[in-house]
Length: 379
Image 1 (cartoon, rainbow, N blue to C red):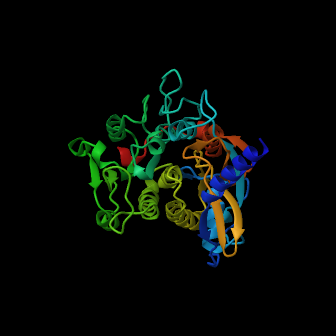
Image 2: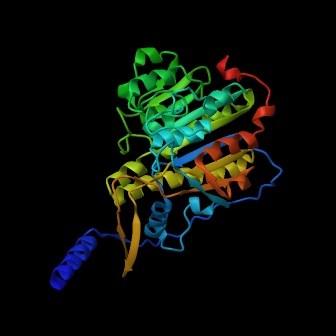
Image 3: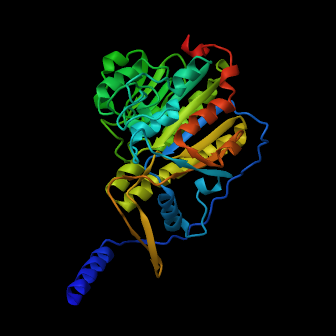
């Protein structure tokens, strides 16, 4: 019996060690950003919500270690305010992206797979829809298809995140002014004739910032396959930000949601190297947005995740390497970080539910006191 127990222990530890993945500890120097102070009395005109899909604390920690070592500071590390968000959906401990994004977009819990409807399938008004009625312009960016769960929650109302052709039709009828990502296979381009449709990276980078049409960028059939011919999250976000801010004089303000969608996909595959590439694009996007907030001084930047994916564990150091391990190929119920910068950022320093992010945004822009109006760009 004793020998059997020893064999079981050897087997378990052997399996555990064989699952270790070894990655080099980096030595890049920190690119320190100019972070300024904002008075707690200041209120934001614009809101940028950045989502690292599947990005838990350990995804950030591993990215830091591999890039520059344990004392390195990523862009996200330099955000002056941070808190923690719970992620559970209606009736479950573990959320999917649809329910989590619905919580941000509507302030309500719903079932997994549902998009901006409650658990009884009643339609819930989303932030872009609410802000449209107050004179705002809105944009959505994702490295997935823009019909995928997170971006779709900001404009679609449907009982399955997988009905992507119907979600695409709902985008065309939504108040979203600019949508950039993948998802070409889900759209009827003839129905998109009222939009300025972009199909490749060159068109995106060369486009004059016209405001007469909805801008729809579809850069791959489904999610964007990373290559030099395809735009990155950083490039799409820069374009959306330039478009929205250039036209802001005609509007009350702007709302932008930008997602690093495929951090999650790599974590589902337990592919740390791919996850690090996706996170690097995400963190460069965060760096640009920090610089924008510093210069603009009227924009609140909020960064969070819908959930953690993969149960990533940072196990130990082995010489100049870090050894990691994945616990699952699925989502976990681990709370995620919330990071903020700009006017109103101090409101995000506590433990909050994901629904609280919605209400904090509305409170900070004094939503109930804003006049009813439609941005001139929609008229």
